[in-house]
Image (tube, rainbow, N blue to C red):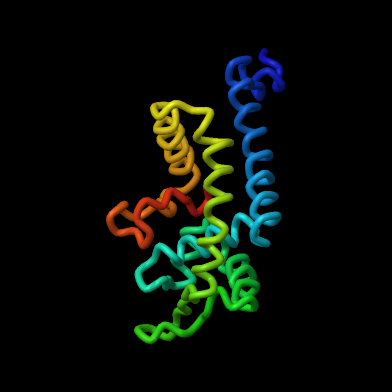
Length: 177
């Protein structure tokens, strides 16, 4: 009979792969947060919220849509948006089309903040994630990430709008890096 521990154990190669990914999942968010806190006084999550709003039509999204984009609960998003609102970077208002929803709108100072934070964030993402990879590996990383994400949840997460539709042509910044 097979021991329970043997059935629950990953093989050597799978364990190597999993340990590399688990380490990445611990270290990368901490590195992204540290850089954004140091340079812009933002968490990585707050930067992602500001970036998503900057890329949205009229710099406005429903809070429920923003929560889905940010892979967050409405309560976590609401707390973050309250902090951003206190700094006059985001404004919330009832949706005039349907008062059951709340809209979040990026203010001009908020747009300026995300634009100021973007270069340092982009530099770090390029140095830590994209720089060590070939273009083919970077595409594979995107494909692999989307496969794993779809195994976790059926809905699709935030995807950047087409390059031509972006508010800042040539911008290479990313919401979550």
